[in-house]
Length: 256
Ligand SMILES: [Fe+2]
Image (tube, rainbow, N blue to C red; front, side, top):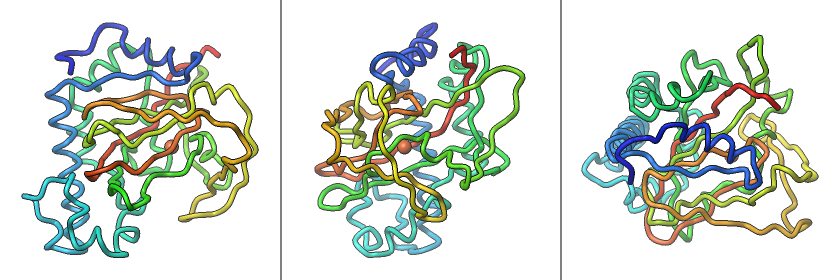
């Protein structure tokens, strides 16, 4: 774990995201990881307490969430919809006050966290995924597929070209982060079929049609990645504990 973010680190990660692999890998500082973990715990307790006070026990470590009554019930899927996975404005401010975000904006010429659905503040979401035998991981997809015209996502207007990259942080894990991806897939073309799910147009991939070499991302808590909008990725179920992550779409200047 690093103590600080190196100069040009974010430029290098962005160049990795547009390079051969389509993904750049870094790690939060210990201090920032603590803040990120506090934020996700506060948001998680806030949401959970609306549904089941007993399960929203602040003394229970978040990676033991799968032991709660609510996690073992069908209510899990009803609770953790996208609407309940947005980080609230106050906690977004706490996150963006960390040295991670200061280094990001200092090192990049221009960048913005996308607010695709007009929350009125930077859109940052979290995920909570139970371990096996639950199947909480997302199927393989590219984030660019979400920008279907019917989803009517917003983007700022600029007088220069911009592009989207995804930034994803593993905050609780048992070395397996639960993130899987196909290196170099942003340079390939795949047939996608669309259907409406959870109020959004979502793309489906017939994985069996392609010989995909899938990599599982291994890393300690605090591992983060910046990856290409066209990179195939998804989730997988880990062995022992509940895993958590935070993600947002970053807009950066593009010279492509
Ligand atoms: Fe995604």
